[in-house]
Image (cartoon, rainbow, N blue to C red):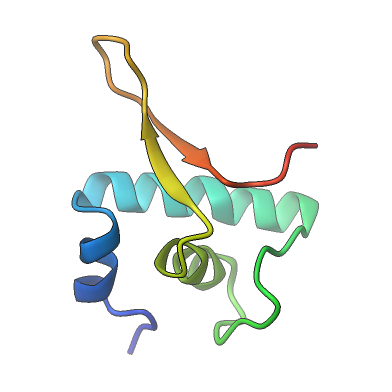
Length: 79
C-alpha cells in the first residue's frame, strides 16, 4: 500500500500528528518549488515523496522551545 509503511515512519517520528504535519508542509514545498532531496523516489505523488524523505532521514522534526510546541521541518533547502 504505502512506502514506507506507517510502522517504519513511526520509528523515525513517534507522533502521528507530527508526521502528518511535517509531511504535508514538505509536500506543499515540493509542489511549489520542485526541489527534490532524494535522487530517486518510489512515489509519484508529493505526499509520498515527503514521507520517503522523512524515512530516509533527509527531514527531521525540530521542536521549538516555546510553551506551544510547533513542528518545523529541518533539512529542507532554503529559498
